[in-house]
Image 1 (tube, rainbow, N blue to C red):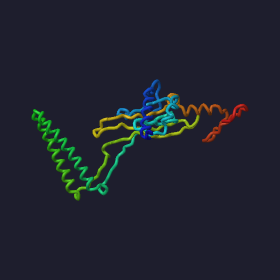
Image 2: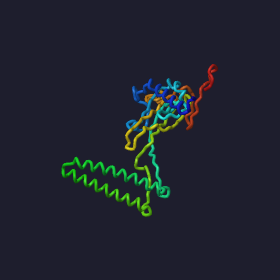
Image 3: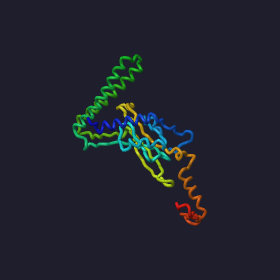
Image 4: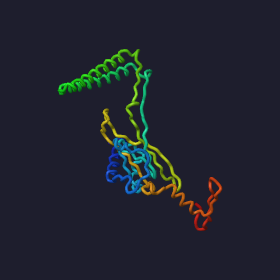
Length: 263
């Protein structure tokens, strides 16, 4: 039987992950500092970035153009000379006119079910509490839960009296992005941006599965100790002995060598 496109993609992903397994990620900031801007605490949030040198990039040609679930080639053919990480707060908001009666009731019932589970856990803890102070705090928590349940039942049962909005605004879910500068030619640079693959989490926020983001790096040009763009242009202009001094856009000139074409 002819393999489906999905099965072929899975096979390619397996091959790609095996290739990456054989290529350890470059160590950032060793031995010299890389030109990386922006916060990187997202790495402590389950994000994974695998840095590879330009020299191995050609080996990844068979995987270009594919959309994999577990791994992403961020900047194939655009090895970075500078990297910037940043995040965006992503959320959605649905107001009352867009919320149907069934959805309204379903969402409120779902939350009431969650409150009931919390109440059950507190009642279970009641059996283990011996101190008077602990019993008092537990009763206060149970009373607050009962009051909240009563309020949400009222909101559910009196839709004409309560406006309802659904939103993930306060969940503080953030998407992380990477921007990179890369060589277009010897003297000019391009810029590009892409989102990072994020880990899969359960409803409680626990990480179920991590994903891999592959970033190719121009290991010579990304070193902060080599101001790549300025240094290259300065070296290039140094070859022009004649220059103007009275214009914002200076003029540079040098004799054309008969055996060397003009650049």
